[in-house]
Image (cartoon, rainbow, N blue to C red; front, side, top):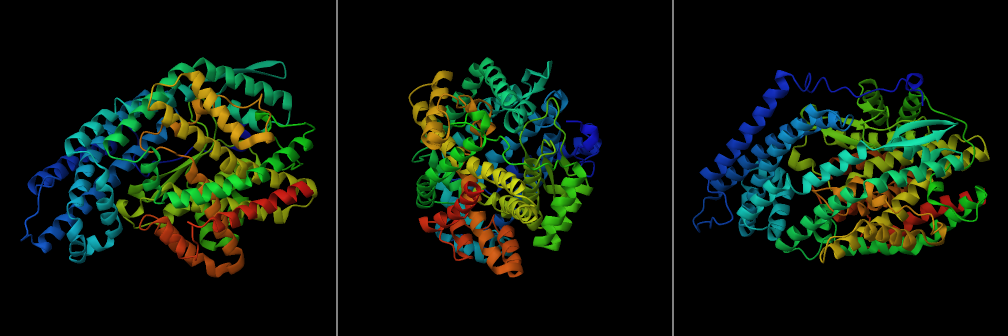
Length: 606
């Protein structure tokens, strides 16, 4: 793609710090260290430890004031350290060759480890206040405003090692789990692949090659891109298998030491859902898998094939001749968002006009897309790899949804806005739905409608079918890792078995993707496992909310904004109940899947 033609922007963070070498940035790093040291001294001064047994004559007013001060200090510390982290990430995520940024990131991560170690100690101490927590909350305004955080901390304190063990685990994470995570990111972001196009051999970074494999209308080129991708990942499979074993092995050890039931247990608590909710959702998905296979079989027919290969999953179907320039994408999104609410449209324009989005694919830039919060300025920054396709327009809308979610939480503290992944996808997928719905209404031909439905169903299939396969895969990885390291061959076998179980007859079993485990960064996260099913939750929860919006109209908007504002201050069950949704019931998930089923039926009928 000609980046000059599209004038693709790079993001601008000059209002955060002038640069990595600026006095302001350097001073902020020093300040984080001071805040960490002051917080540790405060803990020592007030004897904040799980081993500290409260006196029967404890002064509730004084105790409440201590808790309140802790909350204020933690909020201030994380506001600054997360600003530094994401500001530095704006360099490392777009240029993995930037050694200065990498070194600074390491320095910041060391301070994060200190902060997390201290925070774990605070949470452990809060657990000792279980019986008197209501009085502690009632005696202070700040505590009342952070009641959900305090109660959750007390509940989760049951799954903690001793203060010393938690401290050691935090310190070792830099040379352990986070090191493996960093290595996987570095290897895959710097992987370059040769591919012959029109008689010319070109060298592509992995994300660019994957875009060709997914979206190019020429099947021969898609297949060759896929085969080149497989060969490239095969060349680095051993170090990536080592990364996987390192991350999952450490997670298993920590889960056991913390008294967790299994590897899924902490993920459910982080997601703020229970097993009944997950089982209800997964059970409903499993019932609907044959429907998705019907879509895949119909797509194969439209492509003139008996069955799809992996390189056909994203292949364009139908004819949508529209290619978006950057300005086209901007105006289309702003207009569509404005149809939902004037505020959402204005917010999208603000993000575009102020260069919050980094859009140009380039060597050293990570693939995919994400949105990150910049706490100090209460703004977001978005990374995408724009290629002019409708799919990328939809991706931009998705990430702007995350940014709008952050905007709705303006004024909230760090401990108030922490949102589980299950709810973090609510606004993003909702905004995608706005784009899809508007595009279908504007379609002027059957071919254009078919193309738009294809884009929507590609996304739905990825989030439902492929996510299910990833969940099955990760479950098996944790299970096998309890006994020994997994070889690259074993990882390939587990991922293809999972793909067969979910895609079924919808995909050619001889042409699956044996290295999906190698390049997906989610499997290597040091801070969370099972970074998969929350996406399915987000899609189906948002689909259900969008159906409610279509019935209620403008009256839905204030309630939706209120939901987004409070996703860090309640459980998923309680937030859903505001819309009379019971997420523990299979009926809700089935109703959302039926909405997608209608799209599939329309796709088949066209």
